[in-house]
Length: 285
Image (tube, rainbow, N blue to C red; front, side, top):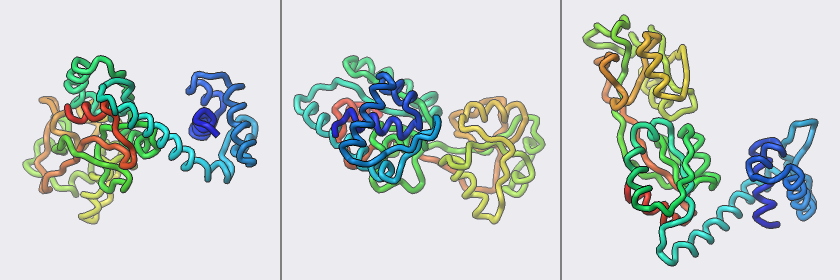
């Protein structure tokens, strides 16, 4: 059992496909099949069920998955500890950012970081906060910049960096735009445009309505806040957006509610040693 076979196993498990896993690892499908076969031989257990083109984990495969992730994380951690010894700031920094942070908060930090540490290769991906969160939990990412979860996993270290003031908004010609004050009951009677139900932002919004015994009905849903902004401006419904995104073509509603905030920041795995590159990035944040 080595890192190559474990990486192959995890890639197939996550993608559900030998060919997709091979593309991800930049090797041939034959090579990845041999690595999985070798691992199955070493463990004397079948790890995948193959029915046609469908690939799924067996009970042995499901049991191996968290162990394999932990082994690979420990290996990377050892490499980081040794690399940190000479104090150099180099190598690859794997991090993810939510689309909102990437567009509205991160550009200045990225510019400063790349100017100060050109020897660091930034492996930056943009994804939903929830997906980036899982990337850190599983050890695929060293850092993630996200909307912080209301109840974080104990294995995650969380640090708030920004605070978004969230405002209820509509288009200038929306029926509620001329109201001096709007209640949640009034909002409930109009179409809402919000992120998906599993997102942290949606949970914050739903909780506010539930607290008053109201059911929140969403007419349209997308996890991209800039898309939601465009839909609101065209008059298709109301939404809850960060103050930083609101422009002159939108009407902020004065509600009878206490202010709603969401916290943005970075997370990393509690059991993982941060690289020098990650530490410097955090200092800039």
